[in-house]
Image (tube, rainbow, N blue to C red; front, top):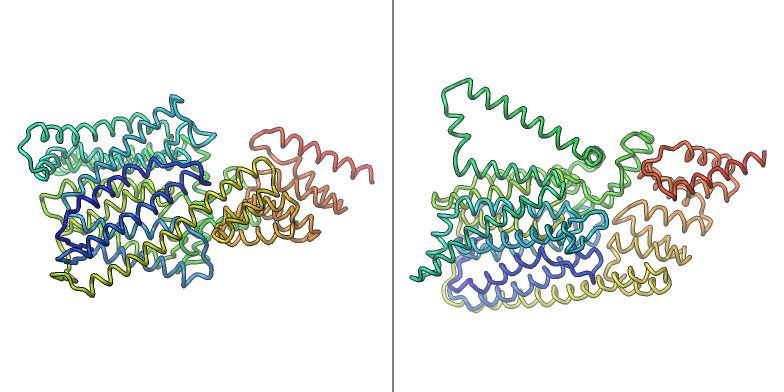
Length: 623
């Protein structure tokens, strides 16, 4: 959608640039899952500030012209379907930060479409600078000047592990590389915007748009190997090859040669390189690769059960672990159990999209992608077009092996690229043209903006407070003051009663505080929005205390089947049988534990095995 307002866009540009610069760096530890929720809160407040200023510009604008492109329409159709599927078609929906982010990004997309095409270069530069800051931050983490956000990894940037951090750098990479490769035309265009005769200013612009992209790609190149993110490496490689080809046309020149021998060498060589590369990436972290393949295998079973509409947006985590448990219950403890774990994402955004939105959603997505790659742009905008396609391709490639659509800064960059691409489209359709200041139009915009911003801001403040309360409860919980933690959890419950992680934490605290009836109710509620071994074992504990032994056994079994390589759920089952006097089942489970292969040796496993030997020896004495 294209709006043209006869007013200065510098005000919006400033806030949008600030958002691109600041958002990836945000990590406020006062929030739970701080690298995610704190970014969301900052993003939400920023959106309301931008919307308010944007609405005022519409109200006081004398001329309003609205144009839309096919890309705008296809995006609207996809987002409308996802919303309708989530709230109307599906039976249940939970609290979803990603969906609220989607709403905010959709609004920003509309606002971005109001900007003149020539102004986007500053947004791209802001994304590059943000990537440069993150690359520097990551290098300093490697040298231990700054702590990481994960106990197992030295390198996370401002994210929660190296995966999303590498994904963000991969999203910035093609923008930086493209800006550097095509810097002459970009610098010339920027210098036209800055209407000045000063040679110093023009030279400064040239330095900024040449050396900042160059330094960014160098710093990313230095730090990216240390992330060990193969998905990011692939994304960087593919986007690099595309941009180099767009710049130098090397492949095109080679293909156009008449020599059949050279063409054969190209085909055979390319095939060999791809095969060797895929094999090398697979074996580099074989356990991780096998884990992803297993998740995809189980996800396909979800698609078979929900083929048309899927399970609903952001509902993958509510269903997946149940399917994983059913898989192992059916097939037993296969070698795949060694790579199974609690899983929130499919590690393939394309596959997860189908799981959540069904084949109908996939059809609409394919239509959107078809329109995206069929867009025509003016010859003078070809270089920018190549940068956009490089950026979209990099994130798309990364999405095959990771979860970029769960990472807000990556999505923000993608929205900027989509908006710029729609703006460059030569074919648009005018749907509104107004001159002067029509009172009814201004009044409608004023009322809509006041309602949206007032209600949205109030809700964001409520969430802000509830997230911080949740964090306080987690802090108290760590000191085992469960009674106090429960009181704090209760304060946040009305606002987070559909948040799976929150309900899991709350239910676990209730269980440890021996408030088992309330714990069972809370954990059963949590299972509607999320399921993990933590929920099932806590549920089993509470039902056991309540002497509802059949439900306790069922919960423990489900936890054991979710991740068969773990000893603890099986240990809980053995203890349940032993304490209930079911000697046969206790003995059978004890033997199974003692015969079980150890994935990672630990003191806890040794203690479990010793206790199982006691169970068996007690059975022998009884005989």
